[in-house]
Length: 139
Image 1 (cartoon, rainbow, N blue to C red):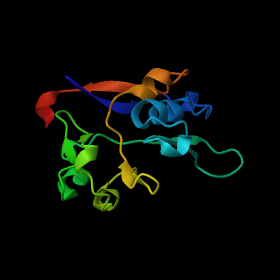
Image 2: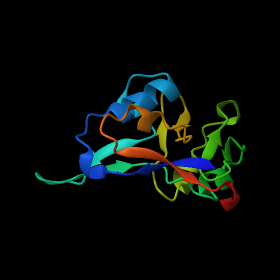
Image 3: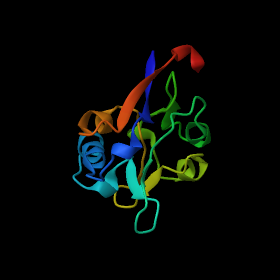
Image 4: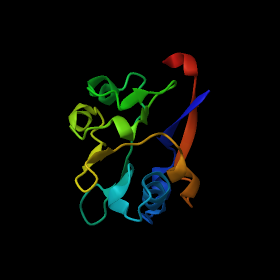
């Protein structure tokens, strides 16, 4: 069984950004919430709720299909693997993402892409995020 990131209990989120900082640190080697593949945002207004902008782990990822260099490759069970050495920084994947969650890092010249590693879920102190099992045959 493959696992993909899901939001299990968004109502528990207090915007501590532990998930964002974990992603930035573990995956990208940075300590900046801006360099994270997951983003916690407010929906707007004074008493609004929070929302997690996450990769939805597409079974047939449009970002991978659009990548001319094959730097993004579909994972069994959903989501993508990112081969940074193949990436030319063309930003085609950013436009192709149907969930609109791929950001482009101007400093590195590479996209910030979720690789479904689960670091954000492991470091969330409130159990908001979870890596849910999905049958590998689903791809």
